[in-house]
Amino acid sequence: MTISYLVTHSGGFHADEVLSSVVLTALFPQAELVRTRDRQWITPAADRIIFDVGGDFNAEAQIFDHHQRPNPLRPDAQPYSSFGLIWAHYGRDYLLASGLPAEHIDEVHAKFDTKFVLPIDLLDNGALEPSVAGPLSIMTLPSLLGSLKPVFDDPSPTADDDAFHVALGVARQLVEALVRNLAAKLRSQSLVAEAIVATGASPILELPMGMPYLSELIKAEADHILFVVIPRGADWTLNCIKLSQDTFDQRADLPAAWAGLTDAALEAASGVAGAKFCHNARFIAVANSRDAILKMAAIAVAEVNSAS
Image 1 (spheres, rainbow, N blue to C red):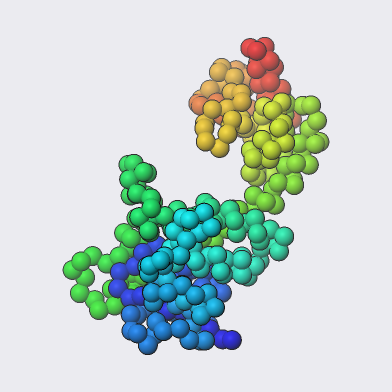
Image 2: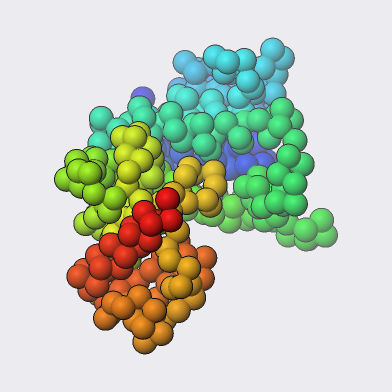
């Protein structure tokens, strides 16, 4: 079976069909993207995938609309948009085509669905009000993509289609970036787990490069680890550890005497040659060598212990 056409509705656009187009155009790059409401185009056929238009959801017939009644629902009874339907049916193929290892497909697919697809589904169906984002509501992805629509008095007969393709390019970058980050997080897990084992009872975790580490620390229940040391280019960083992903509070702060200092002033305050920088909020410090950053880490640990 050859898919020659990807068919969605013409006119104004929303995030769900733009994001569906990201997935489908990546899987079927040879197919023509057709925006229309012509009945002949939105009638199922073997050579096309129809989405966000057509008044039916039938995966076998390759039509993925959600505007009809009854509307398609997720297993937990939350509503699908066309993006959710496309992701459920084609998302795993998209991830495999992107080069993701087969053993990571299901986990990334599920996490992407929860983090990215479900909010689009809920917003598109009115099941989630944009106002829940408060003053950041204008920064939601549907709002940002919607801002790319042509202004009301744009005279161009192709204005809607032109704007759709601009939005498609933006959306593609965002989808690909999140998939890359989810995949990278999975790759980092084994590296962090190995480093935690190597650390033993030490309160200082050393990693070979910058990578996500908090979730693995929490999973390992390595509560004794207070700071993380990471190389960064020619320098080394000493990083504090947040209590969770939802807060800026830390397991331990860097010494108050270091806050906001750089170079000679920080060397004097810390007593460590090569100390270069400490953020005023005391969540990261930088030194010019591994030896120097480990000395700073030991001092920070000693101060935490003396205060407890």
